[in-house]
Image 1 (cartoon, rainbow, N blue to C red):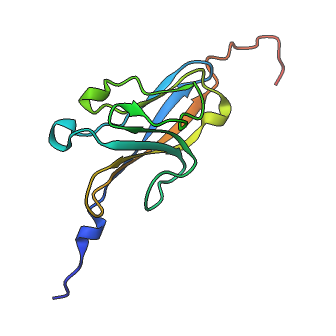
Image 2 (cartoon, rainbow, N blue to C red):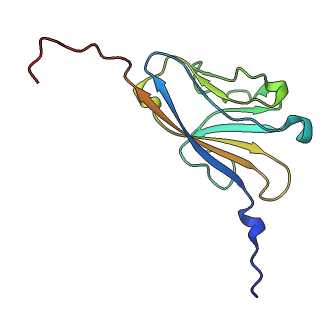
Image 3 (cartoon, rainbow, N blue to C red):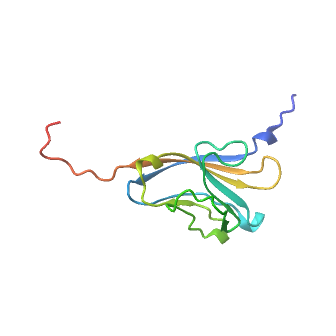
Length: 136
């Protein structure tokens, strides 16, 4: 039989959809086993994750320290607990343009060991009051 190098596909990947409400905050989940790996570097970006690093990076951290000059906006917060490997991204005061795909990459040492998570964020306009006077 043919030997297939399935180890290349051994990248841990999954995607999840999260719904947020405009003007509120939302948390996009991402975490890793800090007790097993120790503190790792993590980056968050928009869109699909490339082969290394993050596209359109919005924040990055080394262990429990946000990398200097990587936080694109004060609306992006890593509220942790970082010391437990919780690197979920909280976005404050959601705007329509926040909708779309986000990627969280946990840089695990070794080839193809990075953990990659994709989150698709949907922005809900909030509860619209029924407009009784309209004739739509």
